[in-house]
Image (cartoon, rainbow, N blue to C red; front, side, top):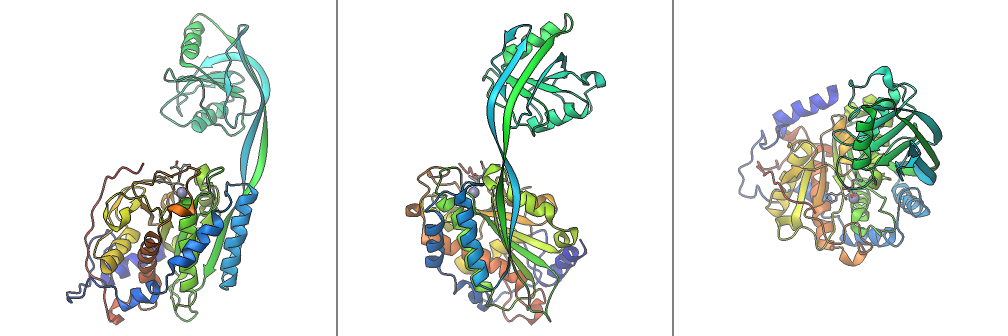
Amino acid sequence: MFRRKSMITVLATGMLLSSGVVYAQTNSAPNAQAATAFDNNVIKKISADNMYNTIKYLSAVPREAGTEGEVRGVEYIESQFKSLGLETRRIPFPIYDYKLNHVLAVVDGVDFKGRAFSGSGSGNVTAELVDVGKALAGTITDDVKGKIALIERGDITFVEKVANVVAKGAVGVLMYNNSANGNNFGQANGEVPAVAITQAQGKGLVEKLKNGPVTATLDVDIQKIEKTSYVVEAKLKPNKNKDTGQIVTIGAHHDSVPNGPGANDDASGVSAVLELARILVNTPIDTEVRFLTFGSEERGMVGSSFYVSQLPQSDIDRIVAHFQMDMIGGAEAGEDHPLGGLIMYTINGQKNLVTDLGASASSRMYDVAVPYGQLGRSDHQPFHDVGIPSALFIHSPVEPQYHKPTDTIEHISKEKLQQAASIVGAAAYQIVRPDTPALERARVAPALVDYDFENRPVD
Ligand code: BES
Ligand code: ZN
């Protein structure tokens, strides 16, 4: 925490206020809106052709997490980082798929035709049912020990509900819907047999329980299949005699949805990560840069969550900014919004160091400040969760090819790639270049910018 605080302090005196908006050091020169020599150090070298070629290679094969396609992509990314001389690591982590062989939920001889939760445990249990309502933490009594919990869907996650009753000793879960939408829902972590039933069935059981004990049988046979997904990490160390001790991370996810070529989602982001790495290795810096590509984003940010969870606290304290790029090349994204619809999303909808720098960089280079908004849905989430200023750079609304087999190279715009990578590159460079935060030594100070919150529909 010390490091991040010191960063903010220095910025407040030298560059910009941590809360956004205003540069403490103003520059009223008439060319204040122009890209500076410092920006040009980075952006003049960005090649959209390089990025395009990366996307072409990566999107030739789907990169679903845990498949050969992911490994092919990971090998490529790793080889690129290594060829730049970066200290490169492939960090494996487990992901789980489930294959259901058999499910049965019977009460008083009636087969409920239940559906096993994704990630249900296996087992054959016969026990009394206990109505635990929505299974909210703190509301469950010891009654449920050795019994099957009858739970209503809603308010908290499936995983939380299951964990809450298992913590009290439940041996099974029978969960009913909170709408008339059938029984296709539910997620668990393999603890006990967990079966979903309809709302009508559940309400019927709640009534039946008022008249005395009800015994149920849950019989689930489900196979847990472990696969391996990866995070690729490449470290660029600062010049030894000029090291702020701070770290900037620049990330994208390399996995795609199953059978999706994922050219824009998110080979585009990966291509920018590689391109910025290529440029920064030949640029003097005083701050460590970590280039990261995450697997299993499409399974719920599993890779980035794993990455953050394995970081020592001392690293977390030193990371002053995380830049996430996801879907930055969609030709048909962004409608008529300026900058191709580029927007910076933060988890809490607040400005932070990353958005300040992004808005300022874009206004210097393109005369338009990128707006910000509030959205999760990508790998900036786990960084935010541990207190790291982070933002997602994306074009919004997203293109019609999103998560479709048509998310191919044909729908990638080189202009958009160039612009998004330039904005992120110039923004990150403001932190890592050796003459900041001691801006008094810089010949050209960044201009003062203000930028707007937008509540823009994304898809
Ligand atoms: N690139 C998208 C994120 C996205 C899509 C943001 C559309 C805004 C609009 C990302 O890869 C994605 O699809 N994320 C999943 C997250 C989920 C698995 C937790 C999503 O949004 O469905
Ligand atoms: Zn994505």
